Image (tube, rainbow, N blue to C red; front, side, top):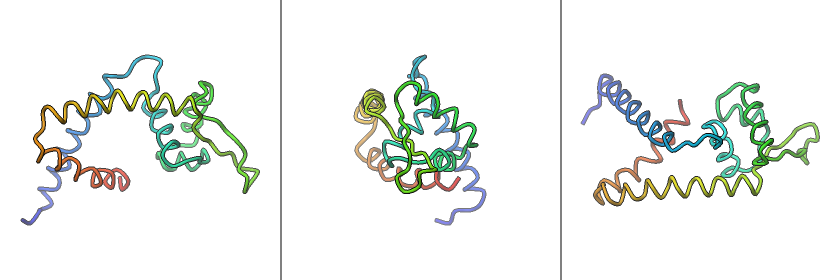
Amino acid sequence: MIVTDEDLLQASTDLRVALGRLIRRLRQGYVVGELTLPERSVLSRLDREGPATPGCLADLERVKPQAMGVTLAGLVERGLVGRRKDDSDGRKVLMSVTEAGVRLLTDRRSRTTEKMATVLAEKFTAAEQRELVAAIPLIERLADEL
């Protein structure tokens, strides 16, 4: 099957709409006082990838350094992220997730993940589940390239 430019435009539109709906559904679980989406993204990244400088985090999250500073300040204030000098370059500061940050992420992931896993188990066939699993690396790659 040959995919035309028109097919790709339609697929891009459909994917954007579907992912937007999924994100809105996940946001509906947001409770005042919990992490904002940028905070959750940064905390998750630090947990997955380890310590990073604020500048590196801004680049990876594709936000301005000032916006990253605000996000990190909120996380540090709540004790979810700590800062320390970089051993290899004392002029740099490394940000890392604290034990409290890991606990919060684990709790939040557990609730969201359990809900999603239940829906996948109850509402999707085994073949559909395999298709979704196979699509994850492609969606991640698309996110990295945008």
